[in-house]
Image 1 (cartoon, one colour):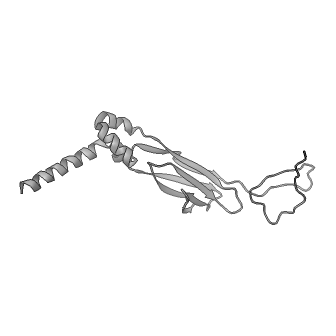
Image 2 (tube, one colour):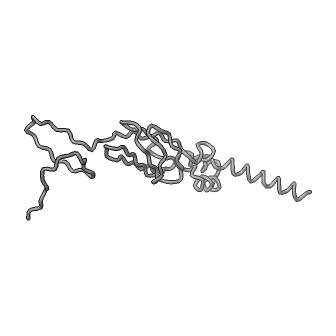
Length: 160
C-alpha cells in the first residue's frame, strides 16, 4: 500500500514539474492555426504534399516543423509559400521559470516555436496573356503550360 502511495505521489510531482516548466507548450500549444486565402477563391491547398482543402481555410500546422504550401487553381500559376518555425517569446519564460527541463519539453513538443507568416493571401496570376488586336505592341511570354487553344505562330531558334 505504501509503495502505491509513493508511486502516486511521485507521478503527481513529475506531472506538476512538467506542467509548470513548459511555458510555450502550455501557453500556445504545439499546433498553430494558419489562415490561407486566395483571389480568386476555391483554390486547392497542399501542405507538405498533402491536400487539406480549398481556400479560404484555416489549417492547423505543427509548430515544430517547417511547412511547404502550394495553392493551385486551373488556369492560374501555382502559388507557393514556406512556413518556417522561429523561436517564440515563451522561451524566456522557460529560462526564468522552467530552466532546462521546460526548455527541453518545449523543444521536443514544438511549443518553443511559432510559424511565420501567420497567414497567407495568395494573388493568383492567370496563365492567359491579354493582348489587343489593334495595338502595335508585341508581347513575348514564357509559360510553363501553354493553353491548347492558343494559335502557334512560330518557334524561337538559338542563333550562334
